Image (cartoon, rainbow, N blue to C red):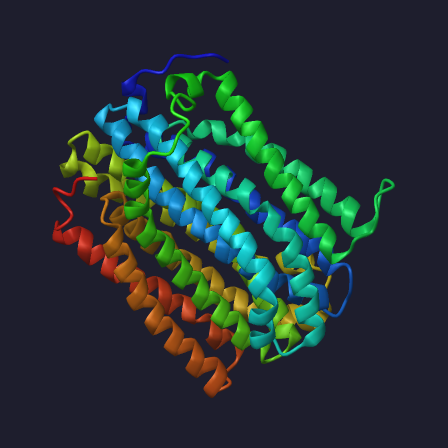
Length: 454
């Protein structure tokens, strides 16, 4: 497997082939945490027929996602920096960026663990009305949060491989993580093969082992492939204040962007919980739809970030609009196909959760709304990540802040004040994605990003 990489191999081309070469492995890597989450929910859905475990999984899933997207913000910032250095041909700087990114991510993971153990009971007590739901959620999270260091390092690895146009190596860790999670979910939730039946908490333990396995496998692949040597990943094992500050400067707006975004989603779920267990369980499955069927859009968006930054580093700013146009055609095409399948067979997807017929009947109209939102997301997310790729992460944060303000007002009025149906509640996704699109599109078309140096 050993190879020697040259600087030109890190540079991307503006072509459909180059886009798919980067995006398809990324889509598989994004699929892993979604498979893990959905696998957990499918098994938990069969623990009871009333939706208790499934509704609790909705709350804990969004809580853990809050911390996961902090790592994602760090990943996106680091990825843009690595891609820019790759485009510029400054290969010696990539290893330094990666190691400092790992140090920053571990500090954030430690903070997340401490906050969860100390503050999650109070936070959930304030937000959840059901005592049983709250106690179950706290016990789960105090286990699940120990997977955060593995997840963050896993995300830093994604930034490295995507930023250097080596996304094909993502596949190995992805497959290992998926297999471990599915097998341990089955064994630990229900108590098979001599292992204890841990029920809801079994899903937390299996996810931690899966994340650790994925991280170990992919680093072994990177080492065996000679990438670690070529990028000098382990040559400078000491903190570098200047590089650390550069990473934080580029990533912190994206971290805050993700925090307020997921914070708004938690706000949405809290309001939904006030309306009953079935509404919460249905909303949890809708999140599964976004996570599972939105993987191609997220992959194309991540590719947009890296590729835009890379070609700017090559001095090809005049090719940015052409690149975005090619990515948009692919992203929208995949989203339209997925929306068609979801609308033709909504009951088939919902049946895997093992819930009652009333659950499926109530959820199908919401699926119609969410599937159309996936199409809107397929182009708005591309434009937003193009802004990130230009290096103007503060503009990305500003766009998100304005959008979340509008979104929060909408969901509060529709759910809490006017008590409208779940269909109208999920129409908030249309507002969210259209708002992101309009401002991102206007910024890129304005050309004010040209000349930005990172």
